[in-house]
Length: 172
Image 1: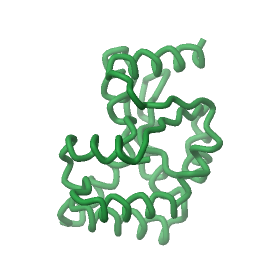
Image 2 (image 1 turned 30 degrees about the vertical axis):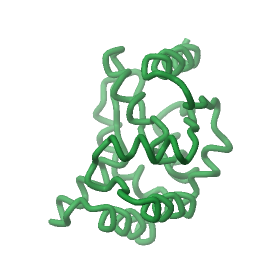
Image 3 (image 1 turned 180 degrees about the vertical axis):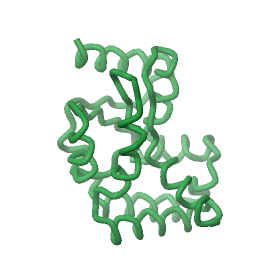
Image 4 (image 1 turned 60 degrees about the vertical axis):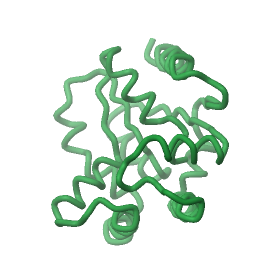
């Protein structure tokens, strides 16, 4: 779910040599191409519109060329939202899904501190975003993940260490 720590892990593991593709940034880039402000409302509507127009795996489809042109052996895809996106990604190689869990209070706190243009500033906006994410199927992906980490009470270093260890086991 938004704010659980996915991007923190992805950014933190860049130093380990992993290439990162952020699906949320893909939507932000699409908004920029359309001259849309990267607001919470605009990005949410655009994400839903892309899925409605191009199918439920549409956001993953937008990164196909980035995946194909990558020379990395391991790509971390940050922000998978549905099993349909996972199916698109499986066309390019082995896919393992790491779910990151955090309580709603923890996630809201993280999002308040993160400061992206689309981060919710109120509990109402936070709940709207959660409901939108649940509506596109994120709970199914979380439920079918290969491994899950509870990001409650962990330091950033502990979260990165756990994530790195799990990924290393997968690629050996």
